[in-house]
Image (cartoon, rainbow, N blue to C red; front, side, top):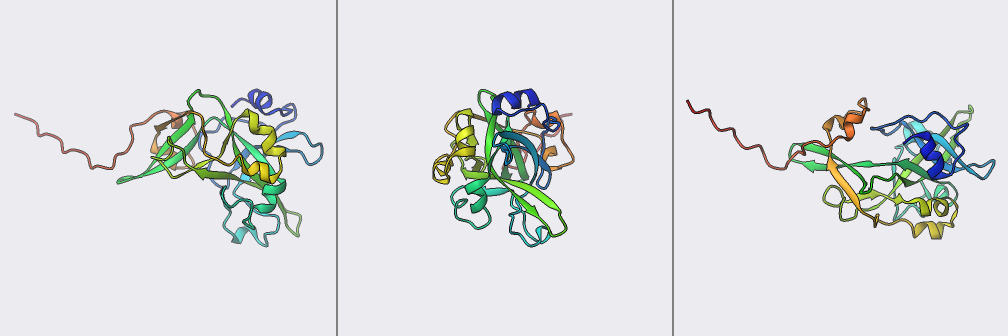
Length: 228
């Protein structure tokens, strides 16, 4: 998504924003573009955070499992996330996401996007950890919910999708009101299989979002012998 489009859609000042380039394969532990409320100005800002959540109270981030997803059903109560859910919710700009379907030949990635191709936001939360030596880690997680009818044949969970009407409320509403936004997407989605090259995080190119022949659960039919 071009930086100008992000600025218009999410209401952020992009003049001093970090460089935003197209990404097609973002892996856990990598940095991801996030829109959040600025703690200084109160306005919205675009920043890059580590995808893999480290709570402010963590003793040693290197020794803990850094969660990339937070279950929407428990995000307001689980110690890992509850303080961030109360005070530090964020938006993750996207025009699609991936889920993996189990097949007899391994995991098959599928791309899911809005049927109209419009960009959207994934609901997220973030936190800031600071070590005794002054090291700072700002990180985020994506909130998930039950899959809707399009995603369910692929996976039983999906990210919480927010359209433009919920951007402001998600960032600013009370935790109770924000909880009401955690639900399967009700709009139309399109889903299609993509290349298994996606399974290698070193691959990050536009070919990854091109439709591919899906893996099947059945072994291939034997070839007919040549007739001489």
